[in-house]
Image (tube, rainbow, N blue to C red; front, side, top):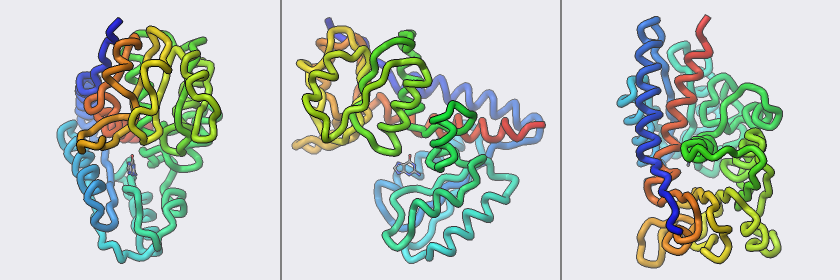
Length: 283
Ligand code: GUN
């Protein structure tokens, strides 16, 4: 069997077109969804990411502001900027790009963002809302994975999902989202014994480890859905995920490629969350 490809670019395009339509409708009522992106320092990867976020906003008709600060910005000054944006009615979403310079406590900064504007879904209030099934913002990468899974038409209810990785930004929220969708969820991590014994039981596998070839064909049940969150460089310098794509695609039922799978979904879900933050402000 050769797996069907889950085309993240195509799904992201459809979702962004929907965001653009809903943004236009909101603008007709006098509200322009607005995102503030804060970048501190010169990290090259972060500069690329924030550029993509701002460009995606412009393409979908959202207002965005990019605030760039020198790496020497004090924690107090950054907290003051976050407070000012919390109070700014033109801003519905606030994103502080991570990592922050070492002298700034990232946790403190994230917690300073108003939960109603936490479109990254990183605030403890957002994590708590996800855990308890209350309304809030779902963090963008795992939320994007849910959209990719839903695009297959496969019902998650009652399925066994195995998440490999337990990061705060992907693994843990991913597991909670799958649980919310009524899957039976196993979380595997670096201390898991016999990973293969777990993944072979899975109807759905989400690999979010950051290590190439974490999941190989012998570890996958025929027909399983495989979502690859990894973004690595292999020995030849080529972009690759956590999954041995060439091998696993011969066993899986569905699979995401890298690039072109989860990647385009993260920024897309940021647009969705920002739009929804603005929509929630409606009377
Ligand atoms: N750094 C890498 N990815 C992300 C992300 O999704 N959000 C933020 N705020 N920082 C990041």
